[in-house]
Amino acid sequence: MSKIEKVEVLVTSPGRNFVTLRVTASDGVVGLGDATLNGRELAVASYLRDHVAPLLLGRDPARIEDTWQYLYRGAYWRRGPVTMTSIAAVDTALWDIKGKVAGLPVHQLLGGRSREGVMVYGHASGHDVASLIDDVARYRDAGYQAIRAQAAVPGLPGSYGVRKGAVYEPAATSLPDEQLWDTGAYLRFAPQYLGAVREEFGFDFHLLHDVHHRLTPIEAARLGRALEEVQLFWMEDPTPVENQDSFRLIRQHTTTPLAVGEVLSSIWDVQQLITEQLIDYVRMSVVHAGGITHLRRVFDLASLYQVRTGSHGATDLSPVSLAAAVHLDTTVPNFGIQEYMGFTDETGEVFRSGVTFSKGMLDVSDAPGLGVEYDDEAAARFPYEARYLPVARRLDGSVHDW
Ligand code: EZ4
Ligand code: CO
Image 1 (tube, helix red, strand yellow):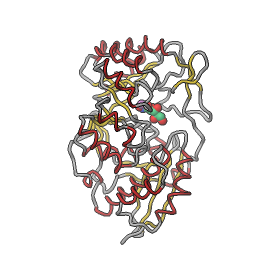
Image 2 (cartoon, rainbow, N blue to C red):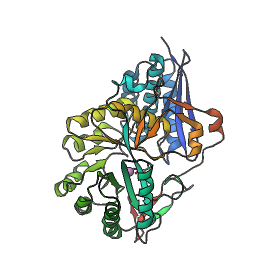
Image 3 (cartoon, helix red, strand yellow):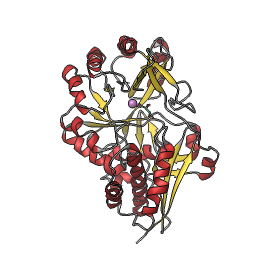
Image 4 (cartoon, protein in one colour):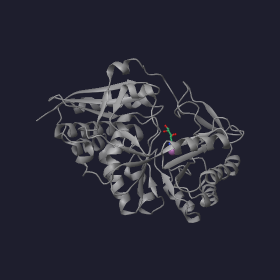
């Protein structure tokens, strides 16, 4: 029996911070798992280095489910993003190892292909309606079949989702940037610019929009209704998700499809949303929701209730978890869409991934395991730098959901 011999926590910042777990087995096989939790990276690095690595040494890397249960139940303390991201990193690395031992790509271990590629959506944005239209055109020209559209709300500099450089990166400052929020201005403007996108380009592509937790349920209901004629693929995170029951109110008022879950870490966090059919897409990800093992469990529950997948795939999810997501997306029957923002060139120097983009779809490589390699020399050129997500304040100075 092969044994886990080495467990390394790798922190690097090629354009942004990433935490990666590397597990080496006694037969020399190496597995990678993403452990990046944006703005709280070192908490996960410590959880893994100080509390998980000692438990893994000597274990059989083939026992993925048993290791998952051991780390989850064995912690005694349940759920939470730091714990679940740590467990995810171990789980993903063990799937990578299993694939390499078997000589098979991970999607083959998960049951094989259900589709020829994974439809993704890209992030178009603009500081006004005209520049948003230009950006949507750019994504259409690049072959995207699905595009998320966000524009800066007039009078609110630093609006969520508006790209400044080549890749949208909200965690850009060494202390949290404070951004202004005005619900009324947003509610007046969003239907206008999303309507302008449909007017310019028509309906032959999927249009998405992220509210990013900013509205109350009744405000979200009103926006959902106002957006019915632009026929969104989904309205994302319309209201904070801690109270799952609050989605019922939104649901009662609008047929705009709802997507939720990028901040959630366990099946229990979406149990009511799924089983009461309060959402249409579940946005949980491999990295923040306990790895391939747990996310597959969530997706299977979702499939019983006609809820489809729409995994989070922002730039803070490394190429390792993107590859894991695409392997899983390739197999599941209730796949919906995968978020894909691309990575900076620096990120590509550290992580060499076999995932390819063509005609608005991602596809996995046939390399054994996840098909991602980590370049230590490149990583050493990009040391960790503290970076925080912004916080939002209302016009009266009080804190709002960012
Ligand atoms: O703000 O990943 O849909 N995508 C998003 C992202 C999140 C970041 C937070 O780390 O909402 O842009
Ligand atoms: Co989002």
